[in-house]
Length: 640
Ligand code: GCB
Image (cartoon, rainbow, N blue to C red; front, side, top):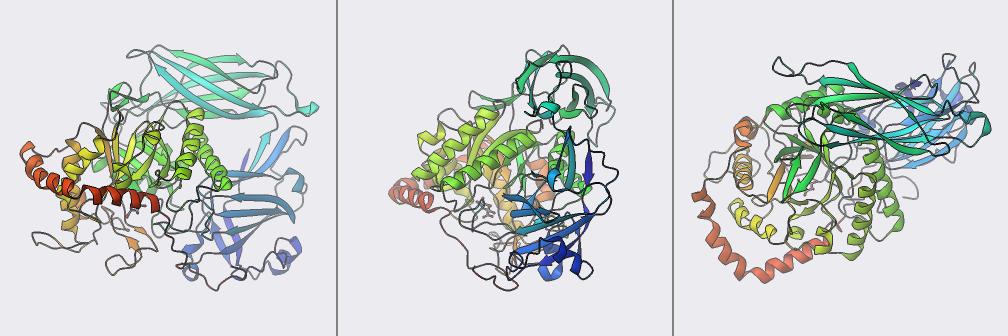
């Protein structure tokens, strides 16, 4: 059973870090001030409150569950948890004054066990949460990042009543044999407590399952396609081996409908453990993804990713974006001709992946192992593993996700970074063998990628800003070919390229000025055509779909926003958007491919030592800069 704790919460800003000392977590403290504290509707980022727009620090949240007589708890058989779907960054929970624990990390769900701390049904229960979002050296992400540090409890909060003995997790993968047949592998993990009273009998220790075919749930599902439906197509019973708490069974389907971006057919399975009343429900799709002959294959056919990236941010909501607005984004992205989305630089709300499953958009998902990570700290590595684990487990059953990325612009020439990433990638591959793994490298690092790193990834990913931060876009053709020389048979994805443009800023000069819409068009247009002409490139992602807030971007054209979006922060379409649909598949004519090659080759070899050295230096120091001076406080907390 789930009881939503979303709604009106009281809050208090703790800019002087006094709350712990003054025991704001105690029921008495709160009861005395109940009527004087301001209210916020959660989930939400606190920055939507004008006075807290740029606040980084500590805020306390208070909630009273007046009556929960509707919650039927069998104290022998059930357990109670409070689940947060995401909080930025450090969370500490008290229930009725009792400490329930802390959680570190943003963008991931977590739970606190609260049964022993809750009073009985008739009394009030006090939930008090301390949230803190300072940027720190040993956190992930760390001090430096090119996005806004939205604070608070911004995804759902739920009180969960769960059977003590239950299905904990289910992961479904498929083997697709010929055009029609498929074998589904259903991996189940159970929680079987040690305490005598709740151990299930042999007969209870059985999983009953029902498989449904849901069809096409996309918004544009029309007559030509399979309509949405929900019918049981198979059912069965799986006796679990006594004493074991995980195992796998298979289901054979003679007529399997594959999930693709054009035909996003979905299935659902309900699993019930013994006599449990609430089934564990998993929605999934049947599709395979792998790399063969230097190309990414979806369902055994080569596919090119034509994508764009998106931060989880929409004004005025911040990150707590309504589901309809998220769907509108996905539909717009599809309408512009893209088939893929990079949910940069961290896991977004689960609803995005549900929508992409339904609408048919391929996903590149990642954790925020980003600039300046302290790779030599073991605690940071453990944190990264926990984040990677959490992302893969939460989103395992989404057919839209084809690649897990363990980091962005990481300096793999640095030994401790390489070791850190190797551990992370190997860990990920152990828990999911059905998808591709990679990390995005900065352009200069891509030119000198060590073989030991290449061996760890399935695809190589490069972020390049040729024509924007450095060189001319006409050098791209040549430099991309230099990436090629470093690879084995692994395909490249250009995970970032683009240019900034302020919506409405035009320039008709032959070489348009920076931040004009025309300059953005010229860089993106040329880059896409060059990339589409390269057989070793399996895809590209424009950085960015929408302009987003960033404390690093303070010049007059940007004013606190990274302007590389192809739409503005309020969804106004820039010039490049209008050209997109006809551009996504276009290649550069052969004649033009050669045009700038010779001069670049000469330049390259003359300056090769300098380029090589630059590559090494940039990749070694990459991300070691921090902007810790650039924090916003209402007032500086003591001891910070
Ligand atoms: C990058 C980063 C991305 C930045 C982008 C930029 O390489 O991966 O987070 O926002 O460059 O706009 O410079």
